[in-house]
Image 1 (spheres, one colour):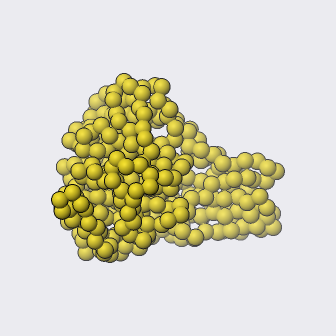
Image 2 (tube, helix red, strand yellow; image 1 turned 60 degrees about the vertical axis):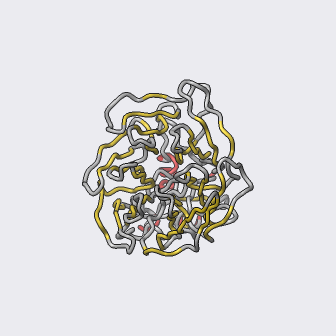
Image 3 (spheres, one colour; image 1 turned 120 degrees about the vertical axis):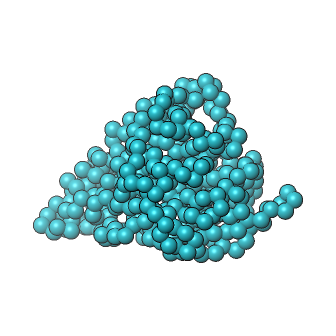
Length: 357
């Protein structure tokens, strides 16, 4: 099965539903689901008693006939690592943790990371250990000038911002009447007002205009299944991966809406458009890849993808977030590096007979 497969409990014994969704206040965090599966996995076989990993997701599935599939082991720990274009390690940043998102500041000197434990974004200095935890919101974006962070409040799910130094007042920048669905903030345009937001259930990407104190309204830009959408530096294009039906990396004009798009890579995830506009980087499951971009008059050309270097993938990483970043000139690439996942990517299956032993 695919390394990024996410198992969610569907139905347990005696018809008990195990699907648990992460609440806005993070009180659930799939703990109930994990405990439920651990209570079902009994017996002398130590392999059936290993802890279900806590990655902010329920990494298991319970079929209607009682079969259980799960990933054993504990949390997969990775290290935010900077590579050159040949894959040589330049340095590491922050503490070791399960990293699902990396966002490089416009100055190229600071990083936002998010992962496990869920609900704690870390503000890092490039190539320094430690980091400043920011637990009042799920911080996802830097403003184009690098002075503020933008995220979603854990209290009510609203879009908020705060000074990027980590100290200052949290300010809500959307009206309370705006529907606070389960969403993911993907990117912000150079105007500092236009956001790309994904519905975390359908993965439909919507563009919204931020006007503090007003109801946020948006327009769909993609069909369902779009992952990790990003603006081009000039704001005229968006790039994203599709994982539902037509695997690959796609670009389309902005604004444009669903339908008008061009496929520029056969398969991949985590597309990132360099700040100088000259390259799109992505991950194909084994390698960091690059697509050279050239502009002429009002047209844009995308070259054939080129593999840059091989790097391991952290089992359980969530594909709707983007743990890949690149400096403006493309000389430094940041990605979570996993030395040893200790078998966490092995999917185990147990039958009802095995569970009763």
